[in-house]
Image 1 (spheres, rainbow, N blue to C red):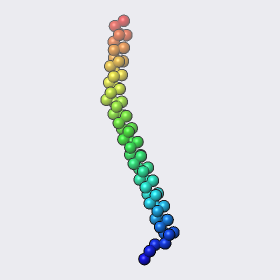
Image 2: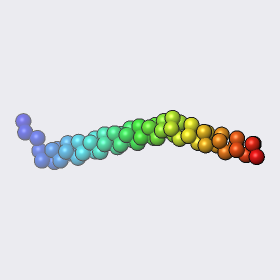
Image 3: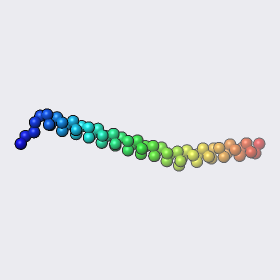
Image 4: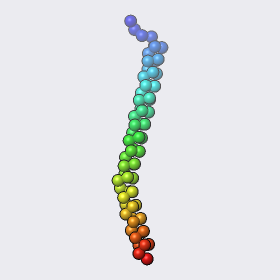
Length: 64
């Protein structure tokens, strides 16, 4: 039994909304992963570098 054109349109629009929800979920997951990578970059690279630089500044100030 063939489906009517109206019911096909309904199925098509519900598939589109499902696809957009899925894309939003994937975008959200990618955003969270990017934030996690940025946080790791800060904790592994930038904080030790900043600590080393501040430690040297502090020692020069203490020696003066």
